[in-house]
Amino acid sequence: MTRRHLIPLATALLGVLLVGCTPQVIEDDAKPDSPNSSALPGKPAPSGAPGGLAEGGLLLADAIAKIPDGVEQRDGYERDSFKHWVDEDGDGCPTRAEVLIEEATTKPGQGERCALSGGVWRSYYDEVEVTEAGKLDIDHVVPLAEAWDSGAYAWTPERRQAYANDLGAQRSLVAVTAKTNRSKADRDPAAWLPPAESAYCTYAADWTGTKLRWQLTADDKERAALVKLAEACLDTVVEYEVAP
Image (cartoon, rainbow, N blue to C red; front, side, top):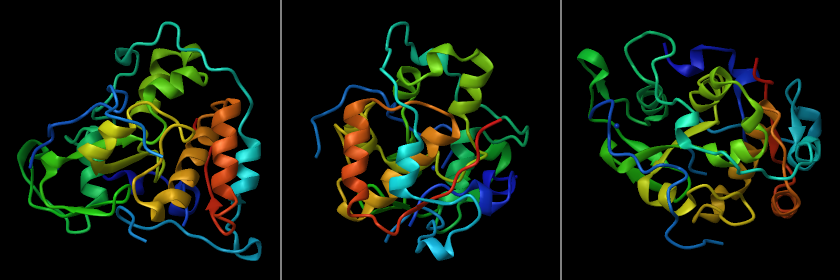
């Protein structure tokens, strides 16, 4: 069962608008290369004016305003505090493979023990089409270190594992090129945005929706960056369901 089948699409959707289960992965909080200033993976998320909002949907600016204020706290962070890429639903495929299967624009073949072959993906961060699973990473839209800073430091190990393997939402985890994931590392929108400007509104919605889903905080610089993005994303809608 893929993550899109875990909950209804209308409540799971966050945002607007690889050969095997263990492809090479660049961690989302790895050391960045250098600071960086509608094609979407799988199914694009909806957009629309207020009259067409789905139940619970918020325009991006209003959604940003709902993120709680907070001061980041990095003390004690270790990536191993978040057990990730596990097989939470027991179907033989770890989280990474589940995302790859679901976001493929041309589905890969699935063999024994969830071995994947073939497939085509679209990395929306940089609008690159990828035909080799090993060139893709699964990015935590809100990186693990950022989640820790924003409130996950106080969570139980079980809740951190749930966050790191969140298949209950459409946009918490996305398949992107390893190059863009390495560039992003653990930075928030004040320090990094996708190379493709066409991705800005979707990325802002994905980030905001994930923060609201997990009730994580935002610091002043992060919020200011999101608000600036929202000025050019007037029709962008955020839909989210608070994580259990």
